[in-house]
Image: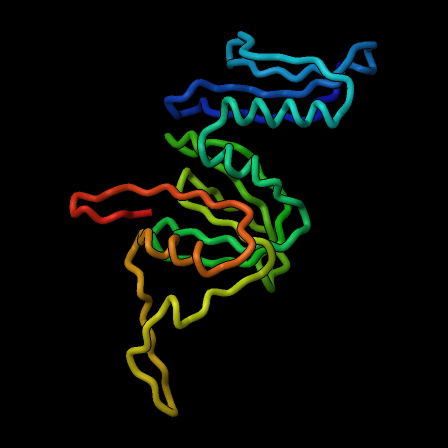
Length: 208
C-alpha cells in the first residue's frame, strides 16, 4: 500500500472529455521515491515522473494539472489560493445576476457537472456566516481578489428615486452582462485571478 499525497480527476463522466487521473504516490515507505503520474481511465499512462521530495511532487502535480486540465481549472490551480485567507469572488449566478461575494477560502476540487468538464468546486465560508458552503463554477467568468472588497453602489446601480423616506435603485447590468465583469476587474484591487469566458449573441452583444 502507498499514500497518495495529491490526487485529481479531470473529465470523464457524462462529459465528452476523456477521464485523466493525476496522482502523486508516495513509495518511500516501500523503499522507492514519489511517483507522479497522469493516466487515463483504462490505465494507460500519459505522463510520469519520479521525485524525492514532497515539494518537487507538488510542483510536478501542478505541472500535469496545467497540461491536462480545462481552462478554468488551470486558472484556479495556478492562482495559488491559500486556505484560511480572505478573498472577494466576482461572478454571475446561474440566472446571470451579478455577484460580488466576500469569503474565507478553504479549498477547491477539480470536478465535472452533468456534461460540463471544466468545473471547479470552491469551498468557503461567506462573510458573516458560520457554515461552510460549496459552489460549482462551470467554465464561466470568475474573478478573485485579495481581501474583502466592495464595489461602490454608484458604479453598479442607478438611482431611480430618492427622498427622505425611500431610495429606489436599479442595477446597471442585464443578465449575463460582460460589462459587469469588465467593470469589476477595473474597480477592484489586487487581483489574484482574472478568468473571462465570453460569448457573442446573435445581436452582437457579449455575454459572460
